[in-house]
Length: 148
Image (tube, rainbow, N blue to C red):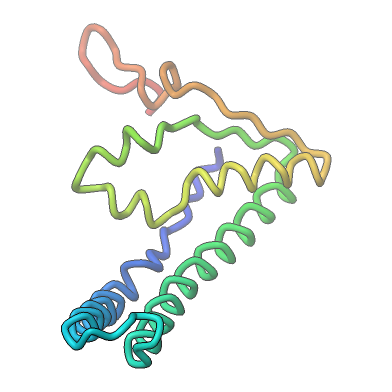
């Protein structure tokens, strides 16, 4: 590692308030259509709002996908060997303080992109177990993290 860090663009956080508002409106329109006895497929205002919510979700997905495509291509083209820790996303998401930020990154999708692009460009990509990496080894005497 050369120590370069890439900032998380947080695409979901940027649209979070707008999406929450659109989903509340969708819920109201659904409730009203049901109260009036309309079928949701025939409720025009509900269908318009449903499409608006779907467009917001699609926008977030496209932004994240584009960012990961560009980043993974740049990493694979620059380096002959790329190594990543095989982090368990499910375990990381148990931390409620970090779960939204971790989900917003799309870590598993990023690793899959690195794997297929390495094969495409004839480079090498490996994932390693995070158990004994230098960032997680602690000195048994003083407790400091080794490798820093």
